[in-house]
Length: 437
Image (cartoon, rainbow, N blue to C red; front, side):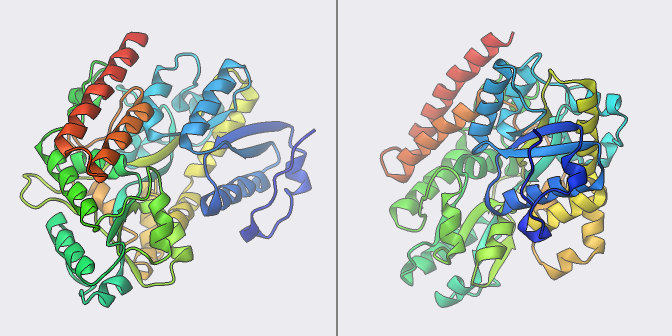
């Protein structure tokens, strides 16, 4: 029996239209979104289903990013894989190495006959998910980059001009001093500490996170994020933690609730945090560029993407792949992409969607929402700043999180923690290399 999808609240529908519900070909789409983002995905799915009567996309939430990836792998082994699986960017190397488990997007699009122009996608986004030959392996879907969220009311309350320049970490540090002196309980918090404060820190300062072009040039890559720039930054944050200026809330996005509630003055988070902050914040907030350390040659370079892409799983029928191609083409269409970008804060994955957003006056009406795009595109990416492609990266992030928590607690110096994380992470990379030779 065909399953029916509950309508998104903002569409005001309770069920799929009868026509769409009777579609003969069902496409299973597994994703990791809840809350506002989950509602927006549901809206996209319903809009596609209502636009034609050949296919019904059934969207299913499978947990957080890690849980969704693991669910997809387990389902493939059981022969019950979905057609489309959302995989966060750190799972890219794992999916590329999963021979026989995926059907590359460029093949799906060519065989389906759906509208597809690889050159339409923003280069810094597309490059993360392409083969060495430049062929798109998965479809960029929700691509973000970290920015700095500022609680202007909190700054004013501490006697700080909210229009001050916070471009550098030195300037942010001075503001943290003033906030602490004024008795503020949460001067700074963060989400996704490894992604923001090591992975993007490295790219933004044009220093390597790993050898072999951060893994793009071979599986025999080694982690090297224990260099002077990274150590300085993590030690500074560790000192701030001990002084009550940096409040650690958790490994994922736990700090978001604190910022949205008005408790914290500064918050480093994904550009996609915009949807939640805009919906919940009862204070005057602003988006600023991610700070950099003044004095580091070449900084700021460019930040790198987070988020996820859509991988097509192998083992389905040709007619089903035709439906997959149509859905992926729909998601890439200018109007749909522009709305997704404007609603969520994720990057527009196509050049046309970004141009439409600017032409619509969205950036003028919502200052700061173009910062993520500018950070990603202002400079041509280098070997150190085009992204990361590392095996077992989800597990490596877990190691990094554990070691950083030691610094925040005052149990380890930054050098000790990063040296340990590099050593432990390299052991995982060697196992991954051995398994995928």
